[in-house]
Image (tube, rainbow, N blue to C red; front, top):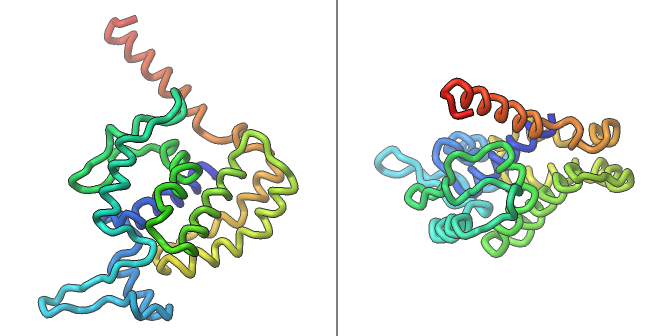
Length: 220
C-alpha cells in the first residue's frame, strides 16, 4: 500500500506544482470548490468577457520561467548508477513536463528531489510543508527504521496533512492523501518497507519477460 500511496501523492504534487494540464489538481473545478469552502478570495476564478476563466497563480505553482529552469535542472541532473532512471530522456521543454515517469521515479522525486526543486520558488511556509512531506516518506522508506521516530511521525502526520490542506485546494485531496495517517502504524507493525514493497518484484518480473522474449527471437 505504501508504494501505491506514495506514488499517487508524488504524482499529484508534481503535476500540481508544475501546473501540468489535465493532470493538475488545481483546475477550474477545484477553484470553484475552493471559493465555496475556503477563505482564499485572491485565488478565486475571474470570469472573462469571452466566457472563459482567468485563474490566478497559486503560491505553490511555479511560473513559466521557473518551470523552464526546473526542466533544465532535470535535464542536467545525474544520479549514481542504478539509483534512478535517466530522467533527461523524458524531459519535454516545449510542454514543460516529463514523460514516462515510473513508480520508482516518483519514489526518488518525493524523497530527494522535491525540496530542492521547490526551494527559492515558493514562500517559506509552503516549502517547509513540502520538505516535511519529503522527510516523512524518507524516514518511512529507510532501510532501517527507528521506533521512536516512527512514533513521532505517527503523532505529527495529522498536523502535516492540515498544513497541506491550508496550501492546496480541496480538490487536491482524496483518500490516498489521507491514507498517510495510517502509514507510520503500518511500518511500526510490519517493519521496514523494503521487505514488502513491489520494486523488487517488478524488476524480477520484467527480467523474466525480457529473457523469455530473447529466447523467442533467438538472441539467447
